[in-house]
Amino acid sequence: MASAARSRSQSGGGPEPHIFLVAGEPSGDLLGALLMRALRAARPDVRFAGVGGEAMAGEGLASLFPMNDIAVMGLAPALRLPLLVRRIAETARAVFAAEPDCLVLIDAPDFTHRVARRVRRARPAIPIIDYVAPTVWAWRPWRARAMRAYVDDVLAVLPFEPEALRRLDGPPCAYVGHPLLDCLAELTPTPEDDVRREASPPLLVVLPGSRRAEVARLMPTFGAVLGLLSRRVAFEAVLPVVPHVEADIRAGLTSWPIRPRLLTQAEKYGAFRGARAALAVSGVVTLELALAGTPMAVAYKVAPVEALLKFLVQVDSFALPNLVLDERVVPEFLQAEATPRALAAALEPLLLGGPEREAQRRGLARVRELIRSAGESPSQAAAARVLAHLRARASP
Image (tube, rainbow, N blue to C red):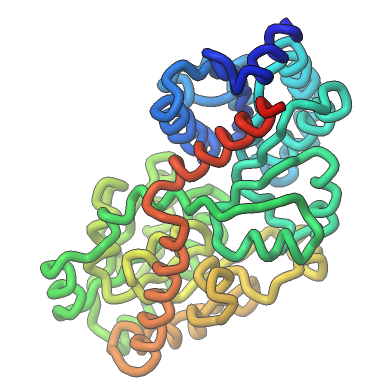
């Protein structure tokens, strides 16, 4: 099998380039599926193996084991350590047996990087590509230099990450585009959306999170914000609901003085396009809002034990639009700063209009341009980068 793999590499990937992918969480599963589709479009004879979820299965991947076994976050890995250790070893052994032309790690660095280190020690000739840069620019920056020993290339989804990896002496890194570029048409306001955005009463989108812990921490605060705002500004509030936290959302709404209209996820982007402003949890949703040109105030609260580690964070900002611009254009409030009074004060001028709203809209337009700078298809750009490594390995 090893000699067959070497033959494929020496002949330019041969008739059947073989790529091993490892995704460890739902967002990575979607990225992996889109990458597989783009790779197959460029090389219809490509073969895949590895670990993934339902989306990657839909593209033909037979996962070694259920992706849920390794889809962990926060302190949960410590509780599932024996299973994770077994899955790391099992995945590495599968790579050794497959002798693929390339190994692609997709996010979930706590798992995928442990696999990569084992593969690099035992099979140093296999190119290893990391799709989605770890947040070394924000947390544990020494990881960047350590990655050079076992990662050959990083495919970044945020435009500032290549420079961050260079500054931290990390491996080569290229911005291939954020997955939201595939949703750009849905997020771009139409003339009708612009009319709704300027109509009265203005539309306010409320986004308390898609994880139960986020919802639990922010629902009381967001409800109080709406109560304060309603004394100063007339507005209509809507709240897109993620199904797995719908019960938590509905329970939290029972104490809100203003009840927003609940929307499905299918209705979310329409609301973004027509909203005058948004009150949002920090996360990818802030980039969605930025691409829709929706001014926002951003809040985040973490567990007390995590707050104690704040001194280890390397960035002054946590809202993604601000990180993309390296400038604080979006008001953001963390932990004790995320008070109803502060958030209401930030939202009021965004709903009423004026210099604060116009300044943020100009900033969000710059975010949109920077996100678009990689081109229209992140998946195709990522696939081209992977295939370049296959060609390089095949060259004499």
